[in-house]
Image (cartoon, rainbow, N blue to C red; front, side, top):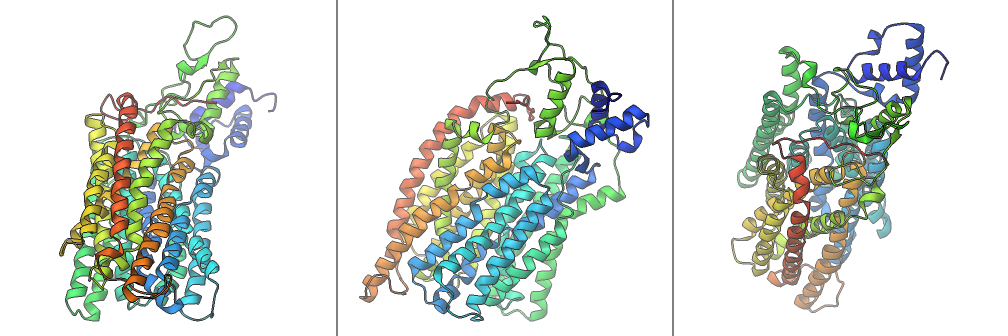
Length: 617
């Protein structure tokens, strides 16, 4: 550091940056110009924050489109029959390809690490490239452009293609959770809700624009999805955190939630109408146009803010001091004094969720070191920021992982085999089943976020309570599917879709509340590994084996032949096993809820979320 740029000047410059003052407003004294350079060298990431009240909402509107694109793995039932018929796979081979799809979709450790190191556009670009390469190879195989591609290559291609979802979803979810740190459950519910709707959106496109062609769908996924993400990546960017929990923000969130519900009902209605009625091409294209308008609805908020701007005061910013007195200890004999060594000004005492980021930790250390203070070093408590190595040794971490594994692992087994389940029970057109599951999945994701957010604020009820309730419902749903009673398939799929969706929208904010936002991307993506592990065990090993074994019995042929199975016995054993697994998951969820109850009483005791002190270790 140059001699005339002392530490106090650096600290004052950092304070100006945090208070929202643009660098052009700094006094241009030689020492302060030098300090600007020093701050830029130390904290380059702060200079990338987009200021203002509109950018977070623009990013949320763009994130909706990216999340729709990130649901491309849910289109597997739309082209799985083509893989089976064109390439001659049996059910066990098909379910193992489905497992590759789930592994790719949910293995997000690399995206989680990348999201903490690189800006969102880099993460989105990697996802777009994976999507292009993976679905491109599948299109070459299904369209017979290239003959006799090996089975392992197709599994790898689908794994890479589905892994684009992890890159897309991690980029927008982590960015928006940090842009709206006080509304984590609501934001997670909205974004994951749109992922749940993505299957219905792709089904609409598949039926109308692509004329129910599997090869056209794969080509669309290889080209259309990357193009969409390249367009939207400019708008998904870190912003100055939203100003807080006011009535206007609540109205904005309510508008997006209402728009997503209207979109979900619209997609379900048009899918049923297209199946029951003979609609002309012009009407079908009109349906697509209206769907696009409904997808653009969240962008109405920043447009409204542009034409009708509101005055916001600096006092409305988030309430977290930079130099937290309980984390600083003065040296030189003043061990009893806990007052901050450098008292922040009123413009710098309030800053958003980035007090949980790496750079804020560095700033706190800077303020302490400038006056000779010593940092307290201790292990983080639940509700504070955890490193990955610190989180994985906690019992709550593994309890949450197991509960999530049971909920999504069993649900994705039904999703992967949805077409075969429908055929086995006499429903040959599975588009309606997929649309119903997609809509109910959306209801579960959106409703799980809204309901858990309401009760956690009003009664400090842990979000995992809703995972417990839904897994109890899943027990009875699997028993209903095993019974194969006439007319109950659609009811069972609807309940299962809702319960499946709730697992996502409750797990994500729970991770951030128990272990902090600092390494949220990595921690939440590790939790997501429960999905592919469950798919491998329950779908790949169990469901595929039971189905092929029953099909061989029905046709009197050897096990492993490419045959179709009809009747309740095709999946009965699978459903009974899943019911038992969900019973175990319910017990684990009850244990977890009792353990983390004090954490939620601490975080939400005042009726709103309170950012805990960030730890440095």
